[in-house]
Image (cartoon, rainbow, N blue to C red; front, side, top):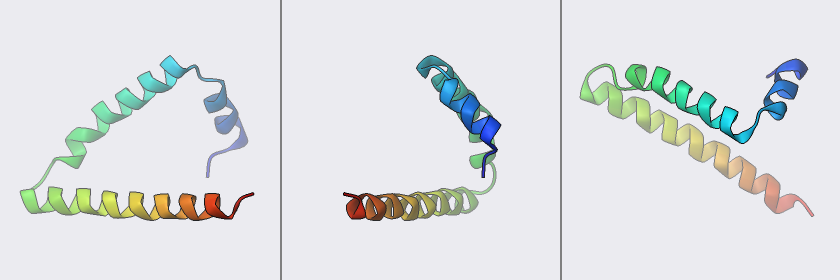
Amino acid sequence: MLSNQTTERLRELSVSERLRMTLRMIDEGMPLLTRGTPDQVRRRFELLRTENDARNRGMLSALSKSP
């Protein structure tokens, strides 16, 4: 969970600042995601897809219940 200060700072970012931050995080994280044997990398990305799908289902479920 993010602190209130962090949440407020993220809200104040411009679109270009958010994009820069996102691209920097991708540049820093991609080497770690692709390190290991092909099977390790495949499982790592499979886990990410599974987690993202579950998160998306949760958001869609919440949206379908909203007025």
